[in-house]
Image: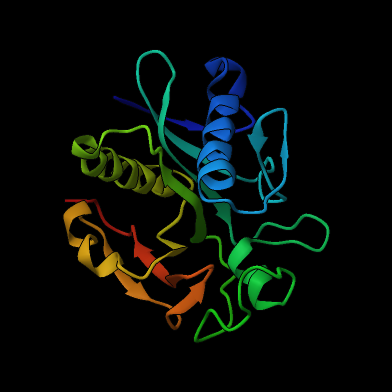
Length: 196
């Protein structure tokens, strides 16, 4: 099991890995979860997949994607869009409630957004916890490399059950909300120190 952090600067060094990650996102989010998201050429994408973002991808030796995540700086701007959580709060996204944060969404060089976090449903149940822990640990490393101390993310509200297992201090940033029948909550992940 390997992890690669992709950026527009290094995509050319990793063959099909970026496309495979977008294909895995489509398979999980569009095909399996039935989310109504943009897709093209068998890949899922959105307005936040820009050169400002990074993608942390856990994969095997053959490039088969096991898990992934996108990191976007909270200082990003592309047309009217910034980052998903802030844009939802600003009422720009009709699929996420605007009342998702207790306070105004931060804009800071040391705060990044973690989004589209997934573990492929092809990963066997016995391996899922290990793959998820590797993704979160390597997400922390990638975040610190870009200067992030904190990552905001919209997660299933069951995060308190597993946060300690992956060695990351997490705290709620907003209320629990039901989105598509699932309880979700915005959480701050503290990457200011090394993971355990």
